[in-house]
Length: 230
Image 1 (cartoon, rainbow, N blue to C red):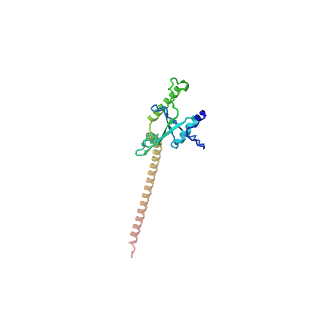
Image 2 (image 1 turned 90 degrees about the vertical axis):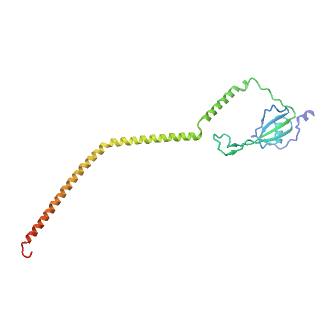
């Protein structure tokens, strides 16, 4: 009977089973608290009855009392993980809920081991250092606006070089076509001179014919004056 009484919880257990596969309960290392108290970080929707049932069913630990409090996060500009926080965009991160449980039996933290070979701590530390170096290199790199400005400047340089090469090609093409254009101009000027000479001869012939006609008219008038009644 004594063993059965010791195996029973100090509180009434609910009959309905509730499964919380996505809930994370974190035990905090609190050397300043007595051995009969343990502090946990729990989800915001977990209550005192949940943590009490959880400790009993998962670890067989009896609890005498539970204290819970919600720790509000500090207000900050913009959300976490933003490279350039926006001004006056205030944001309060999600609150943290903590519970302090008074245990029936004291819980003493084990001593920190001196040899970590069985946990492969060297590989773990090397991976952490490499990750920190990558984060530092990423933070030292140019931000998004600077990268955009650099790309714009490179695009302008490429466009200006393309325009210069195109203008140079047009100049070479014009220089190559200059002898042909000069020959065409010479031919056109000679044709124009021949046309002018032909037009001058035609004009001179027309003047001669006009003078002949005028002379014939004068002669006819003079001959007609000798007749009586003219």
